[in-house]
Length: 228
Image 1 (spheres, rainbow, N blue to C red):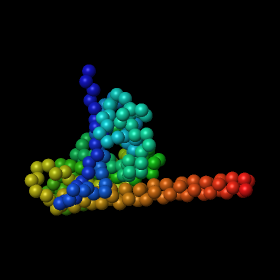
Image 2: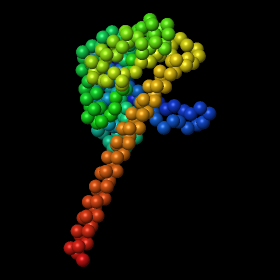
Image 3: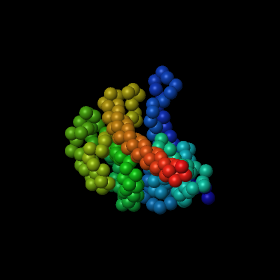
Image 4: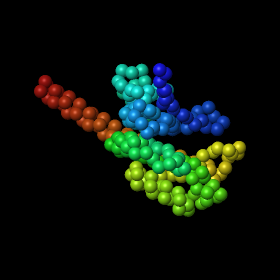
């Protein structure tokens, strides 16, 4: 029997007219499925949050990644870790099934334990709301979308101000400033949250280094005193 695999993929955004990329990346994982043995396992997503999953690793729905596997990174650096967890859900999708909701809560709890900030994005808002489809600038005035945001917030515990609305590019052949405004607003918030989390990680790292240095100085002073 042939198994389905799902790849952990890193995406970079190149700067216009230059060969280098912006100093942030997106790591994409396939969405959660409503049954065990389908889709990416919650344990693997939690490992990805901690930076233990190598880029290009192919997840198996039947077994979790383990230490010693070729796709496992035993000693991840700060840059290997996930700095912002973003949950993407379609605004025109039916109500989330309880099994999927349970998995998402487990992942959110793990991210919270790690101190990772979290955002949610509701996509396809034009398909979910006729008022928004007619005029995208009505996006945050729509009562229907506000209810969607409240329901999503209540189900997952994500604050309303951390739930963003977005329209997908689909049939457009040219860039639309109103669509871009929503995308760039979400991107800016992700970067701001990621910067704050990185600063927190670095502060902890420097604090631990300071403790180790003080310990070594104290230990060497002790050795010197008793052997002088």
